[in-house]
Length: 70
Image (cartoon, rainbow, N blue to C red; front, side, top):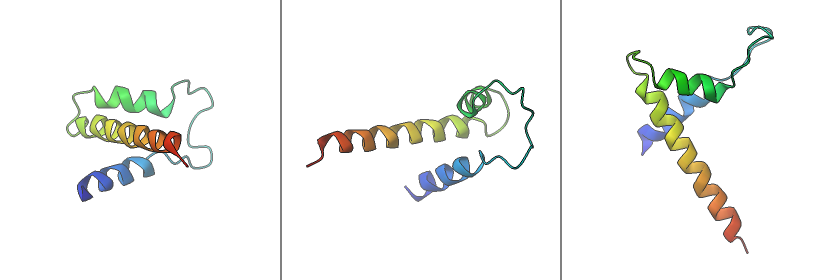
């Protein structure tokens, strides 16, 4: 479980934009770029897909808990 949080923390930190580091003509969202990366043959790229799945699962659990509410 601790490893999962570590992967999510690293994945979350990778999306920070600094100043004007990206061109204004970038049309892909961060999620689209991550999805493309996860499907590539780069060593370790499957970890990006696993982190995305874990984040999606956590978000779904939070949404489910929010709907139950008091």
